[in-house]
Length: 281
Image 1: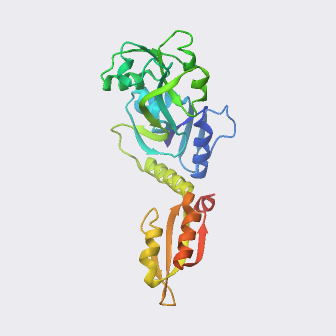
Image 2: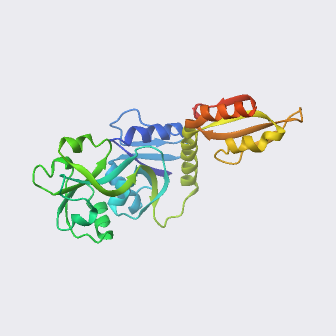
């Protein structure tokens, strides 16, 4: 039975559960439930702290898991990223009081507070910067005000909390993070893990693409396909009227209306949009 670790709380928890549900797996109904067995799919889910998931996967205790890329890299475990899942996006940056530092190299000799000591320590070493890394479990933004550190390294979304503490980001971003599926490094991808990966890929695809069917004059097929290159090459089929062809393509959901306008201007007709995400429910 495939053993999968899922975040039990935090910003990744609910989106991860929803994605698994869309992929056809059982999901827990009670947030206090820590283990769930899906006998139909031969899967056992373990709801764990997001920060611990990479450790469990790396040790082989569970076969795979869903966590953040930042947590994976910070853990330093023997786990690797299998695929991105399209949610939980964030940016990891350095921040300090104005005038303290303007580049990563200027961090040298300072104290850096963070909840991700492994990730930050590795990044500073790669930049050739020698600094003291101060590990905190939370409220990193107040570390400078309280005199614990000179610089912080943390997840930055809107930057509102940083500004409230009189801080500003500086230097290049450390990392762009998002939710990822992980498995143990060096382990063979079993058939069960491959099935999970394919299902999750299907969900990600359905969330970002729609199916577009339309008819177009044969002489304009090439131009139409240039408008709808799709996730893969469009499928072109002959119609009973030999002067026309039917085209099917998966196009980005966000650009659907603009693409339809271009097709109408080109001379296409009978344009049909199918929400493949709804079809999966």
